[in-house]
Length: 224
Image (cartoon, rainbow, N blue to C red; front, side):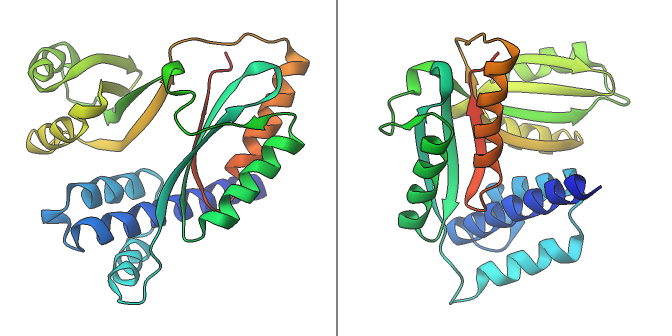
């Protein structure tokens, strides 16, 4: 039970920062701010209370609100697993010190920004409800708006676009009134590292330590 609440608290913190960054970039009105609309969608996807979303927008609109900076860190974990850490921080000095500590303690090493770009493809990933949808027809309709792949999983489906087509697809799904559960920009590995169970545990331990840091938004890796 406590683990579930920890995950929920972490999700709320992450989305709160998404909202703060979106408001600083495009203002507090979601009608005129696509990034804020996406953040609000993601808040609904993790059952973040409406009043908490509204408070996050109000807090981010204040003149003395914290300005979060988006910083990406890259490095290798144990056994050559590539790890990319996306953060949102109001104190990059603190954040880089913590990230380096996690890598060092976990048997890895922090690298230079951009050094692992070749191992990951940046994609827009939209999770949608498929109820009352003909996914085959939808797939054909979305090709002209940047659809690269559509994967159905029960009552849900995942729509993949290139990083550059993320905004176009978000607008298209909104105009088609398709129920979007979440909308994220992800880094998908184009090559994988296979390890035995004991080695996997070492990598997972490092990834979990990174994910628990308050400044960390997302962690991507190429452990198969």
